[in-house]
Image (tube, rainbow, N blue to C red; front, side, top):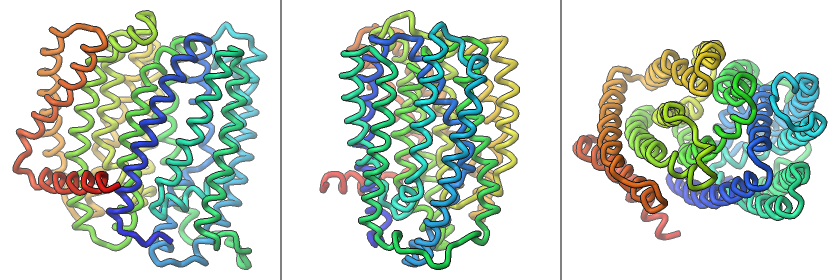
Length: 507
């Protein structure tokens, strides 16, 4: 098992993760450009819509991935290989059932595609595209339990590197075949084939790292104490998250039109990839936090909670300013003015990103602490409110209304309840947390106003885009630095940053 320090593991996972995602972002951008040029917005809309449908169908996973990671932390910390092997065998059997459930649910949805997809493309081809998406989703479940062990053992960088290699191969081959054939079916077949190869590769790496997981289990677990309830609680949590985060494209397709899913996906491509960068910061330390929580050091957990709150507020502010100031200019230069959404729609896209980013520490802590039971019902409330409001506001205001519903539902539910639950578990009051969030939000508004006022006098070409990005980061950084110089969390963050930079230089 991995015996290196938490900080070293976190830094290594972050280092390789950033490199991996940087390469992925460049490839996706090039791939999307070629995709739009050779296939157009109709196919782009279908591509985004089917991806969201399959995310919804992953409800069959029951949130078991979260439970699995949490259940592995303790036996890994104790180097209990027998328990680890038994748990993986248990999860392997569950995931096989999950794969069959996703396949069955996916096939049952085929007759209803006409109600969801509003497109002029041939319906027979639309069904074929959907089935290829479904196949690509199903095959990924067969090695998920091995990936979880690698993550829980703080070796996330192995998965990132593997994903980067096969993403690179997939994107290059897809681009070549798009240019040659202009055929979306071939594009999707390549995607499925590369997913199978990637899964096979990570499976073999897990076998080499942990040979004991392939030893025949004599006493198979039919039920693991406590996990059944955790899985039920995680299901509600997972169900709610999917309703909140993956129904927007479906509702846009049904209410506004599938082609608009394509327009929105051009924005969400960059939002998603930057979110992946940010989530990589979270996942690179997730297993370390899980092990830290298992050790019982709640005071250190609380200290790190305040540090991560400050960091993600600054990061969310800086990235949001970049998006809002350059989105219109960039989309226009990249693929044309006809793909630009209204200013208010862009504003709510960015606001949702900001809202999601500043509360990333909550995600980090609820995952590492295994708080599935405590937050299950508040997430259900969020999902229900989001769905109802999305339909109502979508019919009234189109894409803006659907996305605004997401912001409202989160603001009035989980954004106040989750910090209360986490801090209560750590033995601290939530009052200080909200005072900090209020302070940081005011700083974000100040940064926003200053940046917008200055950027009004800057042009719209590529050089101006670069200038706006630099200004957004500099202004937000200056504002946060000015008002947090004496904050203990800032001083701690400065030490962590210095250590990470030093480790990067060594690597």
